[in-house]
Every structure is written in C-alpha cells, then in structure tokens.
Length: 361
Length: 118
Image (tube, rainbow over all chains, first blue to last red):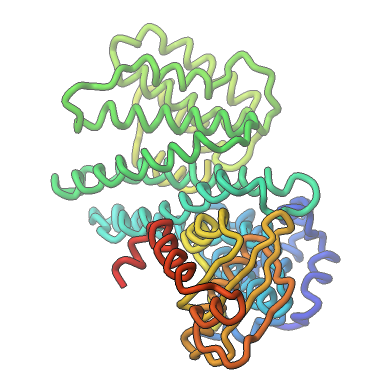
C-alpha cells in the first residue's frame, strides 16, 4: 500500500469524509466515492494483514480513533459477510488506546467500549461463518457452541457492568453512555438471536446428545442475559422493538423445541410479537425496519399453527405494509424475500433465514 | 505486551472496589486509596516488590483506567516488600486491624471461579 502516513491517518480519514463524533463514524456519505471506498478497504486490509502476520507493534503509533473509524467503515462495507477485518482493526485500536492510557493515565471509556463491541461482533461473525460453512457440507461444527457461549458470557459481563455502574462512569459529552449501551444491547440481542437461528439451521445434523447439550446451555445463558437485557434502561423505540422481537422468538423456540413436558402458552409470545410489530404506531422508516423480524415471526407462527390460519391473510397485509414503510437497509431484501415466500407458499426456510440474519438484525 | 482486560476482569474489579475506600492488594504489593466521587485514586507501591507483583499491579491499574478512574498520585514506599508492611508502616495498621482486614477481605471477596481454580 502506498501514500499512507500512519501518524496522519485520522487527518486523511477526515479529508475523505470519515469523521469521528460521539460513538464513532459520523456518517456514511463517503460511500458514494468509489476511490474512497477502495482506499478504505485497502488500508483496512493492510492493518488486518499486519496483525495476522504478528506485526501489531508496527502499528502502535496509529491513532486509535482512526482505526475505529476504519473498523466501522468495514462493518458498513462488508456487513455480516465477513467479521475479521473490522475485528482486527478494533483489536489494534484497543491495544493502542490502552497502551497509551497506561502511559498517560486515563482511558477514553467510550472508545474502549466501542472497540469491545466491534471485537465481539467480529468474533461472532467469524464463528458463524465457520459454522455455516460446515453446515453447508452437512457437518456439525462442534466448536461453535462453546466459542459462542464464551462470547455471550463476555457480552453479558459488559451489560452487567454498565447496568450496575454505567451511570458513574465518565462518558464523553452528549449521549455517549446511551449510544454505547444501545450498541451493546443491540449486538447482544443480535448475537443471542443468532445462536438460536444457527441451532434451528443445523438441528438436523446434530445427535440427540449434541442437541441436549446445546439447548441446556442456551437455557442457562438466556436466563442470565435476559435478566441483564431487561435491566437495561435504554428505553428507545428500537430497543423496545428489538427486545420484544427477540424474546418472542426465544419463547417460540422453547415452545417448539420439544424439551419441555408441558408446552409454553402461545398468548404471551403473540403479545410480544404484536408489541415488536408496532403495526399501528407512527415510526420512522429506520425504526420500522426493526419490526420486520417480528412480522416474519408472526407469519411463521400463523403458518405453522393451524389454529391461527384464519389470521394469516391479515398478517400478510400488515407485513407488506411494514415493508412499505421500512427503510431499505441491512437485511431488508431477506425479509422481503421471506415475507413473499410465506405469502405465496406458506413455507418458511429456516436455513436461508438463519444464514442471512445471523449477525445483522 | 500490554494487558487488555476482559469485561469479566472489569466487572470483577468494579464489584470489588465500589464499596472500598482502601484496597489492599497483596498480589500487587500495593495499596490503593480511592476518591470514588472524583473517580480517582492514589497508589502506594512497595519499592522492594517482585516483578510478578509489579505485573499484577499494572493489571489492576489498567482495569481501573478502563473503568474511568485516573491516578492522582503514585507513592513508591522505600524499604517495603509487601502489602502487609505497607499497611503497618505507611497506614499505621495494628496487628488486630490487619487481621480484621484480612478476614473482611476474604468474606467480601467477589466470587470468580478463575481465582478459585488457582
């Protein structure tokens, strides 16, 4: 790579439209310039490759915020198709930030938490891609569950810390505490949901013992993390929609998995689905997007349970209306495809849904 | 290499210190005095401590920084080898007070299976 002076990276990013505000990248306006996009990718790969070749110490002079901006930019560029580049950039950023802090005596708490979120996200995507590669070859990846449970434990510790002591921590100006908590909450809900989706996707490849162990660990983990998610006082429309959608899916999973002697009632699940769908609320297109998961879940529940068949056509209308009012972001195309498939054939393809939605709400 | 704390490390440290004004840390041959409202601390280190003590202190120090604390002052206490000597010589703890602090420390220790295994 040429034309890159490490110590002026933050300045170079600024000139190319990648600027730092509270919590990270200011906007995605830089995406319209192909040269900038190419530069962002080649610069990011330069650092990620260096880390993987054991050359971390060559990058210690690079400004941590610049690395976080690149990491967040690669998240935008690569979505959930690849996690290691953004994770590697965040690892170098956190290493530099903490090394600097030990010398100068203070840490930027927001920056540290943004790095933790990016690292967790990247780890989850790496695990998921490896798992899905195995599943496509009809193999069950036995390393997935232990790695993901370890990761969920780390995420859970973060939520517990921020719920108990977040108010006392020295966040930067503005709403940094809110942004950080919101980001951890969304990522933990997404990783948590992803674990269940992957189980559903690979269930047919697992032995009874593997199923039992996976489900038993899910049960223990979910009860702890749900407690921490419920205690988080973010209170934004997106977090309410996401949490209701996630809880509804988890309980539907538990209802259907066959591990309980007495089945769970469907009413509380549907009630959470309704809250997450927010059919009759005024929502912005971006907030509306987050309701699409619950829209699909409602169609799935109605199509899989004959006693709700009469409600299916109205649920399709509501889902189509939700698509119309939603912004076309993240996995919009997947939701649109799944809703259309449910409408036309009444069938739900777990594998396709799980592989696409693993790490992006 | 710089030590990077996990969230579990940070959570454990925060739970341990949040109700303490004085944190005696035998593994780091040090004593830390907190000003929690000011989010800062003074650190007292045994000058004759070992390399292992020093590494352990740096880990706890890094944890505190990541929790948003800043160090006001660092005092290197000459002629002192460990935390007990620090408490006796620099904080005038009597043998009774030392024993009480030891018992209380064990009673109030935050559970972490990693430390129990070692």
